[in-house]
Length: 138
Image 1 (spheres, rainbow, N blue to C red):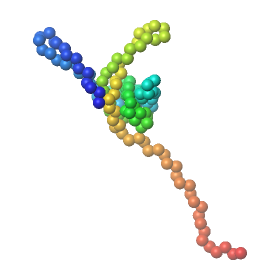
Image 2: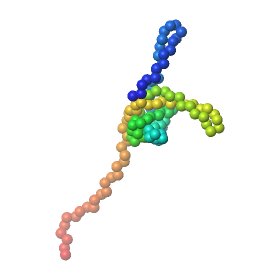
Image 3: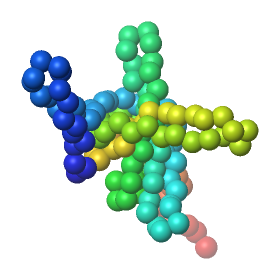
Image 4: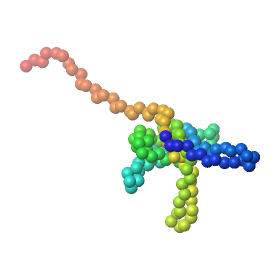
């Protein structure tokens, strides 16, 4: 599990406190996970998590790495409910036209599956023809 990010602060009254970067959220996947690999072979999987708050829905980008990323990509799909533990990370980049952009993401250290996948439709077995047991005259 990733180490919690802590930063010592002072409130001006001589007391010290620590900032803690620790996130726990639950929600449903809004799309199938997107798995890719870095040039050095590390798996990276991105999820879009919908967190329903009454009539309002918040969308959060969750990023997983390594074996967690591969498991998430293999076993989860759109609509699945998950619990995510991790930390906040600000992703910053510059667009092709030179504009600076940023987005707060959750770097997940743990993803727990909160439901079971819907059972796939099993096609009915084909009906076998009725066997008539009678003597056939020759």
